[in-house]
Structures are given as structure tokens and as C-alpha cells.
Length: 284
Length: 309
Image (cartoon, rainbow over all chains, first blue to last red):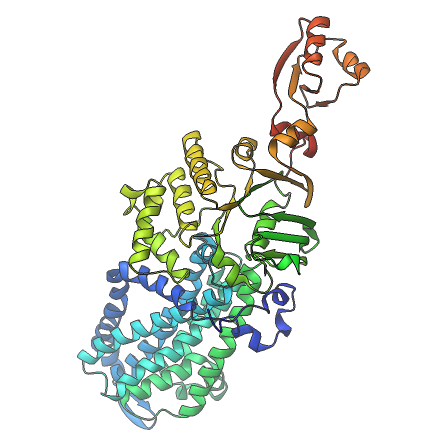
């Protein structure tokens, strides 16, 4: 293959100097063959599409029923960026944001771990012209794809209920790519570090579930005390929900550029770290 | 000029060393595999066979020394090397998310193979592995033998120049084992170079033109199976058990080469049956068995009878 990159960095990586390697050698071994890994996962997804489609279609409907008919009638309106919003209008973008996080993070934690550890899928692929960097890049892109598919389905469902402003709502799709890439990489870092599959409980309950609740998803973080709001502003999901809510409402989100930059830079750093840590775990 | 860089030599390894932390798994071994050979790596568990294979297949980076596969450096050209190899791993790592045929199709994609040629090749390989009527079967529903045959078929998708078999028949019943052997012989006769590891001496004798015996990360012996047996043991082995008084004394005095296990003595008879005759004459009541020497005798002689692990 003309111009295909070979792998001068692999051996140095295995020597233990993983944290001092230049970034170019981290991504340098990723090739277009990553898409074969992505395709493999898509092929599995397609054989089980019914069960895969059910949660993102049903979940928003359940939220709409519970919060629209139940909670929402108690809360009435929410003050967000200086305007009073019906609670459902406020909350649904939060639900979509949470799904963007969950679908990629849980794909590249539990599901990737099963492929790596129990099914030995990574080992099987490594006997072909793919390198570990290709495998991890493929998993990374796949995790983000799950977020995108979930976001698209949820967008369609909530759109039917008139909860999305069009065409601005379509911006949720690229935002799902961004958020998906971030949490997909975060999941892979976790997978590279956990000894056993039960160990995922620790990051899930210490990081992911608190984020689910405190990232401006179900209530605006402006109501929090200043110190808590400052913490919330550091959480990646806060920025995803700012951006997604902006798109769903058809309004410019606060600090748009900062949020995008944070998530994009975070995705690059996290995916590089995921490759380095996975290389250390898988290639011995 | 550089002999190591010759593209037609399947493997040239020099001072190949692999350490895992304080453990030296492979300790500076030198070996070659020539085109058309079937080379078998033998050795007890932990001898370094699989580690050696993992270095050659670019799955595991070497610590020092060097290894060239078809003239390509394993540290620099893993993709190019892996394109030329067919690997049957020790562990079954078929993809349980797909059926038999899909396993081949999706694995082929990793080699950038697709289209009508591939479909034909997959059909041929299913035929070769006697799995044509199992094409739509889920992996979990295959027997152990079928899984191994499918892994062998999978390793042949890219028409490899060298086939690597890491314990290809471990855990199989005799039928399953012979089915794999027949297929490996077929491949050998069509010119495929084979490198295998095994615990089964019969397997090595049946398939290999040359065996490399490893222990503690080093190469202990290396030759054709027949030559090794003749050189190390001789033609026959006399096994003795329930020893009568005086027998051990006789063996010691005669200075016959022998080996002891907990319950038995194994005499290496290089003298055309004279040892068996003499024991028969002196101790007709002694329990004994006279048999051909095998590679297993060489193995146990050189690596000892102590349990490993």
C-alpha cells in the first residue's frame, strides 16, 4: 500500500516510556483500516437492530409521559438564560445530552471490554494487517456512532411531540459526534485501566451518574450555589447540554466557542491517552 | 548482501529475546525457517514457544535481538509481515457475534479482501474445512473440532506464504486431530511453509520436517524428528516397573543410559536389543516393555520428568 504508515513507535511504547512519547507517534499508526473495526461493530449492530432501536425511541416517550404529565405539572416553567421555558422544553435537550454520553461511554466500557477480554476479538484482529492503534481508533469512532444514532432517533421522537425547533435542531447531530467522540474516548481510557468488568461500577457511579444529574440536564446550573456551579461548569456533560439545548431551542448557547473547544480538545487528548493506555494493556 | 533481508526466507531470528518484567521468556535464541519447511516448536509449558510465535507474528514486540520475516523487520513492518502470514492462535478467538460464513467474510475484510473472488474463496475454504453445511451456524453451536477447522480456514483467507499454528489440536478428539493433520499436510504439499507449536510429540513426528526443542526460553535441540530420536535415545526403549532386587544394580554396573521416573526405569537401547535380551536372560520375571523410541522420549530426556507450573 503506497504511503501506508508502518509502525516505528510500537516498540518504544512497549518499553514503558508510554507517557513520554510524542503525540505524533500516538496517532501516526492509525490507518484507514480502522474503518474495518467500525464496520465489524456496525454489522453486529445491524443483526440486532430491533433491540438497539428500542431504548432511544422509548426513552424520550417515557420521559415525556413522566415529566410532561407528572413532574412538569408541578414545576410549570423553568427560568433558563432569562426566559421562562415549559419544563419539558427545558428537560428534553438534557435527556438527549445524557444519551449522547451514555451510549458512547457504555459502548466503549462494557461492550469494548467484552470484545477485548472475553471474546478476544482484538487479539484476532491483531493477527491481520491492523495494529492496535487501528483497533482502538475503530472502537472510538464506533462508540461515537452509537451516540449519533441514539441522538438522531431521540431527536425524531421528540420532534414529533413538538419539542424541537427546526432546522436548528439538526445541529444536534454534529454535537452528538463531538460529545460521542469525547465520551467514547473516556470509555476506552476506563477500559484500558479496569482489571475486571465489575470495576466499571466505580467510574460509573463516581463520575458518570453524578454528571448525569448535575450538568444542567434536569435543572439549570444557575440555581446552584456559586461553588457548585463552578464545578458543574468543568463537567463535559454541562457543555454538551448547553450546546444541545441551544440547538433544540434554536438559540445561541452561552459561551459556544468555549464549550466546543473544550469538547474537541478533550476528545483529542482523551483519544490519544486511550490509544497509549490500550497499547500498554493489549500489546505485551 | 544482507542475508537477513532476503525476502524468500520465511524467518531469520538472531538473539531473539523477550522479557516480561523480571521474567525472561525467550532468552536470545537463533533460528531460521526455510521456505517449504514445517518447523515444530516443542517444549514444556512456559518454555517460550508461544512467546516466540507472538514475536514472529508481530503481536508482541521483542525486547532485544532481531527477527526478519520474509526479509522484513518485525519491529518496523508489522503490517507487511502480517499480510503474508496465516495465524491460528492457541485460544479460539472466533467472533461469536457472527455465524461461520460471516466469520470468514468479516475477517477477510481486515485484509482488504472483498467481492466475488472472496465469496468464491470463502466457499472453497468452507469446503476445505468440511463446514459447508455449517455455514449459517452460530459459533457457540460448533464442536471443538469444527472451531479449530474454521480457525484454520480463517488463517488461509489471505493465501499466506507461511502458516503459524499455535497448538493447533490441543483439546481435540483423535478424529478432530487427524482432520487438522490431513489439512496441514495438504497445505505443506502445496508448498506452504508451516511453523507450529505443540505439546504432542506424535503431532510433531507426523507433520514436522524439523523440530526445535525449547526449555526455559532457550533452544535445547534442533533437528529432524527421526535424527533426534536416533541421536538422543537410539532405536528402542526398555521400560521396567515393579523392579526386582538386583536389577538397578545391573543397570548401574553395565552403565546403560537410562532415566528414572517415580515408578519406572527407561533404558535407552542403542545396542540393537542387547539390553532387553540381557535383562530377559538375567531377570526373566522382571516386568518390562520393549518399544520403539519416540520423540516423547527425547522430550522427557532433555526437559526432565518434573511437572512444570
